[in-house]
Length: 517
Image 1 (tube, rainbow, N blue to C red):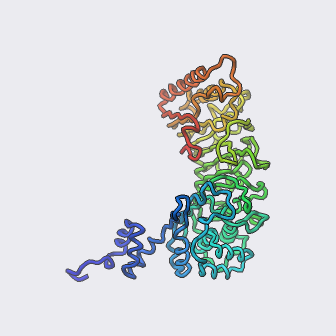
Image 2 (cartoon, rainbow, N blue to C red):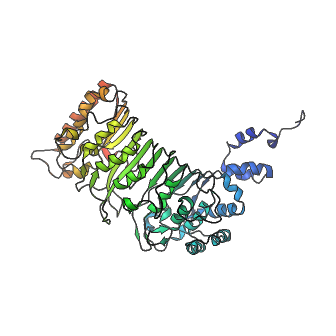
């Protein structure tokens, strides 16, 4: 550049240009695309790098329509080179307003308002797949899932995908025998080796995915006139991704038997060496082991155990916590696991709320002592009932989790009252369960020398009306006094051992939708 010549943006070093662009907003990138063709080439990679679909109000406050999907799809079908810039896609977590869950057909706001996108129809017409006709019908009808399916075939550079859980209940069932939706069939064709590929799809579409997040359904199970939700076939293809590092999935309650777990006719996926973080909801003990068997380097596991009270007559939806199966599953990841977070809930299928009542048994809680052999486990959150059972007093030595059931590497422990409202029928039981931790606290540095924080998420007392069998002369004040006595001793020992103690009053103070760490 000659001395005295004005410096322009385009004359800057490439690294400087990208550094400047990294500070701008989406609206800025859009404006820059209209300024100069050379600047447009730079701005487009930022404009398309992260796509966040939104719902736009259209009059009625409860009415929403999708924006961006059709314009984006039209653009990438006309200019496929832009798909190399798309690294992340986020889809709305909630599609349908709760008052419309049972509507038939799909509510109007789940339908795209524009005329059918001819480019999308032309693309699907060339696929010649068994479900091509149903796919085209969905496009002509304006179904969101049909257009989203087209988009998923055009994403060779996508690394992060977040989908609302209801994404699989808006579409029609294409294969009634497997309850497969269009999205499920497309995902299998893209990701599962034994399924036919999709002609015209971008080579390697989705195979670079590193993070997948599928949030929970508004309700876990639906019996809609045209749909029986069973999303297992839709989410399992993600376990065939070789580059996947983080998976957060909510399964439907309707699950196949463990012997029929993977997509029909497909082999078990090869071990996922890069997968280090896994969050699973609505998955019971038999299926847990199938997934953990292919995660040899898993470091963080968040697992939500659920029992549903009605509508399901499935062999594994039983009021039994099978610690034999749980520990057998966890042993697959024993060498690498550093964080284990388990929640347990008894829910109603009809309204999704938690239920108190109905005895839940813990089978062989003594197996939990095997956690002491996990060489890298530093964080553990677990229902106290999983490791002690619900039958006091404990009799056999192998039933006593404390003091020696925790790994020496442990630094953070959360003990919760999950499922206790189902099992405590005597007001004297609660303090007795809490007292089980005292032998460990008395010798904490012997068993867990690097321990730092104990979180007890337990009810301080239970109202008399909530106790099924109140001993004669028993009052809630008496029970509260016993709780305070045990908690006071726990607090004294925590102070003596130099650890942080944090107490909350059970699920009322800690939402069931959140994890403890």
